[in-house]
Length: 185
Image (tube, rainbow, N blue to C red):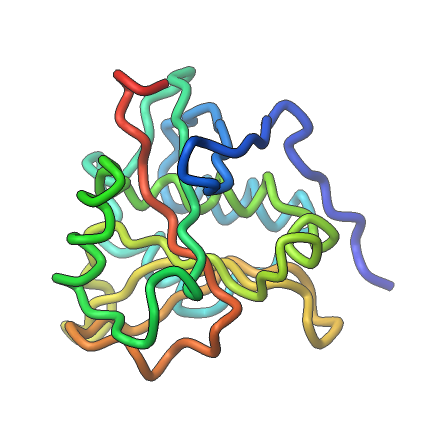
């Protein structure tokens, strides 16, 4: 029997002037091992690579959120970006809307915020965190991803192998997470 998943009910969802979903999360300055415990005890699934990222020396203080701080995260749907997904192109898209590259620590909080139903409602299978890549395993770099419960194996915090050309990891039902600057909060 699957464990009941506990979602953060304090999270708010809204649409901004660009029509992007904006979610507000509260920062928790949690170390990697604590993240794993927190998410798994709440019923979420973590991929092996997500655990490696969280326990590597790469997931350090510069990737964690400030405790108690409010963060607004905008999701840009893949359909708006088109077929080309490269690091430079994603930076361009962030700047086009005035968004910033987020800290990796937003991804566990987003995982806690999005139920399977909310992701289905938004026609999303995956949310990709375009944070600075983290060197975690055999000198490979990764970014976090959030996956819907597609195969009855649980709502997952996963990882994608980072490359400058990311096209190969997308199916079209993704959104990319960016930080809304605090001046716009």
